[in-house]
Every structure is written in structure tokens, then in C-alpha cells.
Image (cartoon, rainbow, N blue to C red):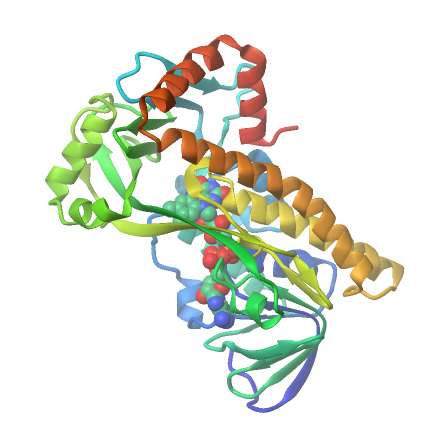
Length: 394
Ligand SMILES: Cc1cc2nc3c(=O)[nH]c(=O)nc-3n(C[C@H](O)[C@H](O)[C@H](O)COP(=O)(O)OP(=O)(O)OC[C@H]3O[C@@H](n4cnc5c(N)ncnc54)[C@H](O)[C@@H]3O)c2cc1C
């Protein structure tokens, strides 16, 4: 929706960036009656009918429940939700695998896989259904300071709380003088969907091989997402392979376990850069989603962690609103920052440690990988802990 150019408008909360995390925040706060503006630089069509971007998001149970609570999960077609029943990790030619499965009695899967564009569309539809969410498209933030956001058409948005969810390369973060540690992994993730001859049995497979890693994520009947990560200098070579050659490589990565493969979508590529913001808040300002912490996707935590941040910040804001106190006070923001830091820091560091171990082809690293797989399987408490972390059931 366009703005009245140059006008000044007042909202309880202004959110910059209508990606999945920003939209989830808007829906959560609108549910309790707060008046929200959410701004994105893309068109309304880009938000209402987002194009496929190749990302299949592995959702933990807590995320699925949260999307359900804010009314978005119900808007995703059943056929677009894929159960992730088991997961297997393989390392090169090592005969050992580390298998994660739900070994309790109920039929709950480890998690769910849903395409990123389906999640975004559902969240947009839910946000658009609220009369107290004002969606402003094709606008960028020109400048911002305490309680004010000026858009590039001159419109000023006044607010008690400005929230930035404008990606890991957040311009808003910079405007508030918050720095970030960036880690360029020097690698590129290439994603596409394939058909294959054998059943995937709803099992995700992650294989680490000769400097490349390959994850196969189970989608529909004999359809999977293939996620190959390579050194950046090899990415162009991989992308210029024909569809047939590329499918053959994917088959080899998992030793033909799913039979012959055929590409059914184009390939999308993502240069991998991790980002951890020095602070998550400033006066009347908070960073959420990738703008706060942009993760390496290998542990599939980015969006899950983003939703956790939405929950933490929204709870603090709603509590203040219910008490009739300032929803953008430093007390509210610090509650969010402390809790979210405690949640994110260990996951961010553990993910980087995993990336280091599994992308290092030094013989010692290979040995540690094989030992991890062997021991991991023998140590049930370890496996159960990881499975619980993956599913976020406890
Ligand atoms: C290949 C891949 C696989 C992944 N798999 C998983 C997974 O399995 N599980 C998981 O939990 N996570 C996964 N992730 C991470 C997940 O995709 C991100 O964490 C999530 O998309 C972050 O959402 P966001 O809303 O914070 O940011 P984004 O999705 O980056 O959205 C940012 C929004 O801000 C807008 N914007 C940017 N700049 C401006 C500006 N200046 N003004 C206005 N608007 C602006 C953009 O247009 C966009 O709409 C994966 C990521 C990748 C790359």
C-alpha cells in the first residue's frame, strides 16, 4: 500500500522488513490489538505471491506450534507440508552413520519441511487479514532515530518501538550504529529439487565428502530437495554442469541410495555469510531474525531461532502493554536482548564448530568425524539430546 508522501503517521510499532520473521512479529503483536506498520522494499505482488527460492525450511515443533498460534500454519496447504521422520549423517567413505529418530511412542516426526515461499505467503495472508497491520511496500528506510523512521518518499513514521527484520545485511542496524561480526565461510550453497527412483522414507540425509557437503531433504512422493555446499571457487563449475550431470553428482554423493535422480527445478545459489550483531537493541529499537543473527544453514536453525526471538520480544512488549507501561522502554528491550542472546549464542557457536569440523579435509578432522559418528550412535543420551534440540520439544 502506498503512503501519503511526506505525511507523518503514528503507530505503536513499526517493523522494517516483511520477510518471514518481520511478518510473524506483525501478526503476533496485531493479535493483541497493537497498531503496526510493516515496510518492505519489494512490491506487494512479491510479498503476496513470493516466488520459489529453493529453500526448504526445516521447522522444529515449537516453530510449527508458533506459526499455528499466530494463524499462519493453517494457511499452508497440507500437500506443501512434509514430515521429517528420521535423519542420517554420513561422512565420506566412513561405514558409520549417525541416525536420529524419534524413539518415543507417539507418531510425531522430528520436524516438518516447508518451502520458504509457502511460509512467506501464509504469513503475508495472515498479516493482510488484520486491519491493524498497515503493509507499506516499495519503500525503504531513508533515515531512522529514536522513535522515528523516515521512508524514501519522505513519509515519517513515529512509533514507540522500531523493529528491524531487514535481513542479515540490515541497513537499519547500521543506521542505529550497531556493528556486527560477519563470517564469510567462503562457501556457496546450491539448492534444487529432484525426482528420484527410490523412496526417501521421509529421512533427511546429510553427507560430508571431499570438501563438499550434500543434504537430501525429503519432500513429496519420490521428490527431495538437494542442498550441495561447495567452496566458492567451485560454485560456478557446479552451476554450469548440465541438469543430468548435476543429478549424477547428487546420486554419487549419497552412494545411489535414492536411485536415479532428475532435476525438476532450477538451481538457486546462496553465498554463505554468518552474521552476529554486537547488540540486539538500542533506544526504542530492536533487531530480530537474520538482522540480529544470520546463521549458517547447515543446522537449519535460522528461521527457528528468528521465531524464538519473535516470541521473546513479543512477550516482553505484550506484558508492558497489558501493564499500561511503555512498550519500547529499555527495560522491555533488555529483557529481550538478555534472553535472546542466551538462546542464540550457543547455537551460533556450535553451528560454526560443526561447519569447521565437517568442512576440514585434514586426516585428523576426518578421523574425528568418523569417531563422532561411531560414538554418537553408541551414546543414546547424546543422540536423544541432539534429537530434542532439533525438534525443540523440551
Ligand atoms: C539455503 C538456505 C536454507 C535454509 N534452511 C533453513 C532451515 O531449514 N531452517 C531454518 O530455520 N532456517 C533456514 N534458513 C534460514 C532462513 O531462511 C532465514 O533465517 C530466514 O529467512 C530469515 O528471515 P528474516 O525475515 O529475518 O529475513 P529475510 O528472509 O532476509 O527477509 C528480509 C526482508 O527485509 C526486506 N528488506 C531488506 N532490506 C530492506 C530495506 N532496506 N528496507 C525495507 N525492506 C528491506 C527484504 O525485502 C525481505 O523481505 C535457510 C537459509 C538458506 C539461505
